[in-house]
Length: 188
Length: 293
Image 1 (cartoon, chains in turn yellow, orange):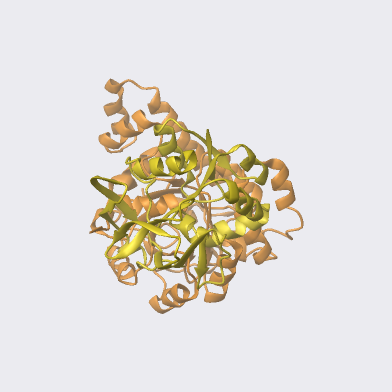
Image 2 (tube, chains in turn blue, cyan):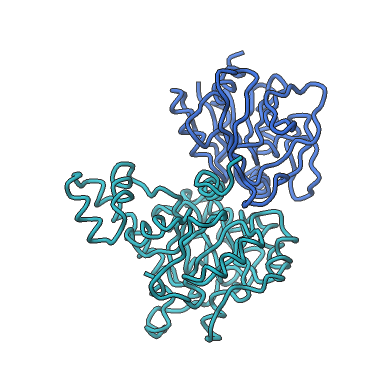
């Protein structure tokens, strides 16, 4: 099994090292044709304006949407913004893969970025140390969305049974549980 | 809830990887940079090429100008303070800039001491010319390192020299035995704990970007192939013939830096890059890279 990590911009290398820790083969994706050999795709943290633009430059947007019909996609932070349906921001064209409404940088500028414990509904052995960096907020979720984790009554990890999105960065640090959950979505 | 700790400071630097940080002096330029795909903008009153031309003392930008740029774009906004000028840094922190560049482009305020950056919630980026300088800045709390290059010249030669020097420095200590590391720490004037960490991991503990003289997509490719994880472009964009086009091409080059065919396509019809300066044209006392230590 090969997992693609979209490597247009952002902390894609951090996702690769988590996947390696889980003994899963990771592959950087920069070109549309590279998606063919992947069983899942991760869209990393970074700047969503840049990632959205680079998708159009190389013509990978439609390929990702087609890929997502067959395979799970996991987005973190900017990746979550890209997966959303509704965004009050004309600078970014989202992929419309998950029925969530998102506002960018809603937790504040960098001086308000923070680390705190969140609990995971699928693994309650111990809390997860979540790193929020200029993080987006999920304002509204559709009927097919399950909230897997909340922080201060805001959903921070969501799934529609196929795709997965986190508003923080599970790739920063050594806790592999959220990536493991994504791998289970692929195996289902 | 923990704010301003190492993880979130270095975390933002991680998010900027594979991207381009552009110098801008007005909200209009900031908009051009964001629309071209910049991952962040550096708000400053004059770009380095103009600072070099005008002379005089160069200081932190007017807070109202920084604020206007923050209101214009959604991407991170960085700003520069003078080397050692922690009061400017404190002011920039209250403005909630996303990163502070303690920069040799501005006139230094302290010839002996850099800012103790651990005291701040906002992350800092600092310039360096070699591994020792990089580790001194990281020891003081920098969350990101960039080459100094020679700002405002459009000449890549110094950034290349500095990037090679950092990479050579890392390779050198990687092959050393533990009993050689203290002498190396003494020789390069760097904290022992960081020298030991680099010897073990084979890389800097924080992201390593390049700056100072980048003017074309090919320049981006060169420094990234030499080991830079991202680039700062100062005068190279708004001193070129077609800033919009140059900005977009430089962003594309940061992703496809390892693909010469793509770079050929990206480099087509950009108009002329900034004119630039040869190092021999710069009087020695006007070399910005020699500011700080």
